[in-house]
Image 1: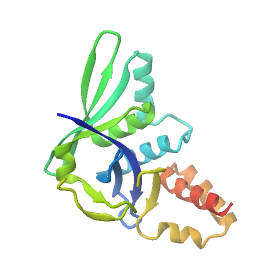
Image 2: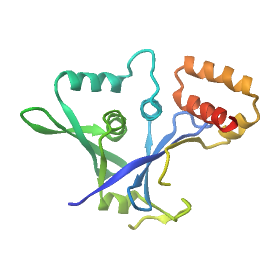
Image 3: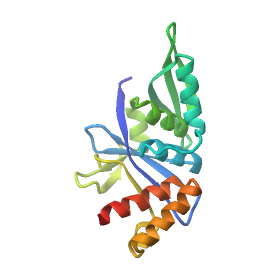
Image 4: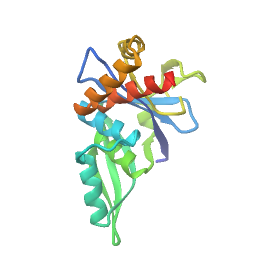
Length: 199
């Protein structure tokens, strides 16, 4: 079965539903998007790696990467290979000097590892047909796929960026320090982006 390459195009969370996050994968050279609901910890792990932040201590996925490197195991690709009752399944395709193996993984963990290793993300046509969303050229949702490429964006759904727009630069810097201390890297990215926008 032919693999379709995807990239992470957005990571979002809802302020009203603090445990509800989504990572949106986009078809390379295509208009289909695959939204996947993930947990807060995994969303933070993906955001930290996407934004090349350096937490004071390694996160779990950093530890796993370090362990794999120490054991001379390389992560070649991840494949989102199944969808059952709304739950995505993935596997890590790894190799050592002697063997190539596939390791079962939660999709959110696989994505966090893919970002750290810089390896490609794949899925299959039938999964995009079942769960994909078709976008037009302006990144507007057209319809679920029966069947925004660009810089990765991190957004909040319920006016999170609007709240930041009403704050002064001093208030934004103070808030940035607070959320970094709390290790809330997703909010930190939004604040940093607002500060950059004002420069």
